[in-house]
Length: 127
Image (cartoon, rainbow, N blue to C red; front, side, top):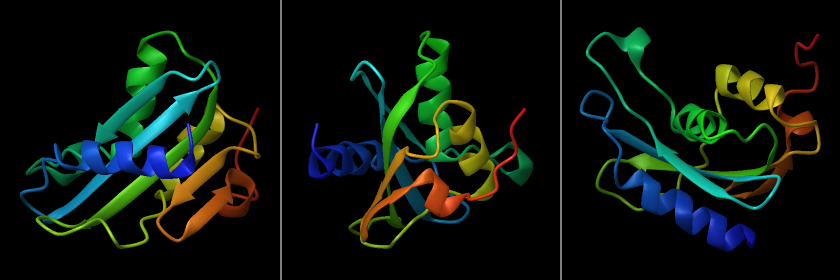
């Protein structure tokens, strides 16, 4: 799957976002090591600590289906009701969760280009 196709899958997932508080819709699409595609959107809650990022939604879906290695993830975001044109890198929690299921070479594809997990989280916590 190309970066462009992965970004398109993330944009499609973004359309399902539940963001009635921030009005900032995010979608993510990831590829597992065997090429299986999983997507997710952000899901907000009136109790903000219960909110779930799009990246974490996609990761949880993949892991709950038995996948343990992620090879790429694309993330798109922007104001609800607009095109996903804002650069939307993963938050720190999502970066650390990605590190649990990928090495530093993981491709993180954003609307302004492709990065590695090492670029975004150079000193991640690991056991």
